[in-house]
Length: 219
Image 1 (cartoon, rainbow, N blue to C red):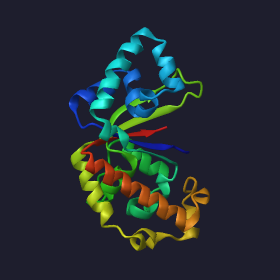
Image 2: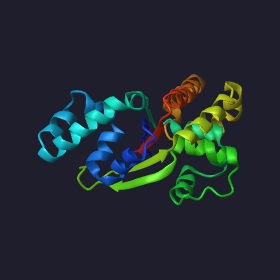
Image 3: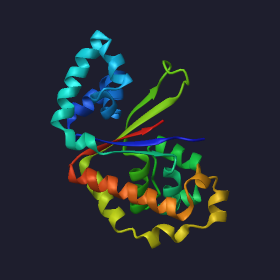
Image 4: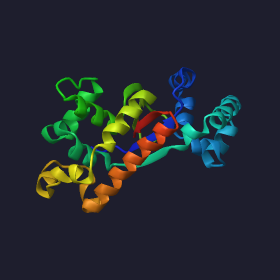
């Protein structure tokens, strides 16, 4: 099983979250704001639809008003599970499928507070919407989760306390191979893992500075 993880800064405003919950068009625009704000095939196709065009005009106004929040973005691909394995004790006990099942059911009971926060940092906050997309030829599912700005700040403080030595404490190649970590062999060894972790930490730093929440997509 493999999921790509995409993290997008989003204004921590009820009006914005209500739009994200309201319909498929808003979910796409808020989850990929740069692609809809700037000239792209997605934007051009949206402009061809009269109903979508009205939403796009409102989106442009929101994007310009909250530019600092929307600016923060990373596409983490499938590296997230390797970092989860190294940072979260429970991930070294449970398989990826078991952890995903626990999280999908909003059941992280039994995890330490640190594990719970770090796993949410990697996997996303509270479930915003679970979209089944029959319109996509692939039939893929897309899960959107949201974390508030106050929890983003909490995550950043914990990540700042994690040194590179701490991160690599549980780097044991044989054990990680047995855990069937997605993309473990393509992440680039220790250097790739450190790079991915620094990217995650920098993302939460920038999101904290902009006082934004985070919209997570698992695709």
